[in-house]
Image (cartoon, rainbow, N blue to C red; front, side):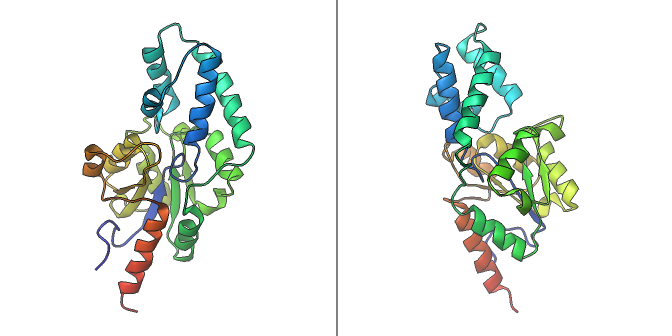
Length: 229
């Protein structure tokens, strides 16, 4: 039996980037926490959770709402970005199972795309630094869409650029915001949690919650073995 969370046929796999492929959310938390602290503010785990998987325009609003209208948003982001770049300079870490899954998809001829809330050119730079840019046929960033996640636009644009059917795409996400976007695009959506755990709300919108990208690879290999040769 084909695993229920894999579209049949599978036209493409579209990935979120931060927290799904790149283990960058912890670096962002460290950088933002230090930058806020230097200004006399605190970004605790609960506040940071509101920022995960959300584009910067929305996060600016959230930070001012939570920390006050006087919060120096521009100096904060300038310092946080510089701190993040310093942390990432040592190497952009990958989430477990990334290379194995991407290599398998390439070997099977399955198109691959990115749909990220990070803007250009930062998104492409991160993928380049991580050695992943050549694994993808299409990269859709915050800069490419008028309506970012949780709107479906990034996923729909990725499918359009690939020339595939959204209903036959598998989307891989780590955050509720991204899950809402992929599900609204009509894609079979898998959550691989990073900093935020699965909830009843995310489970209602996903076809599976898996511990790692390796679990997706294992399911694909199992599916191939079940198909008569």
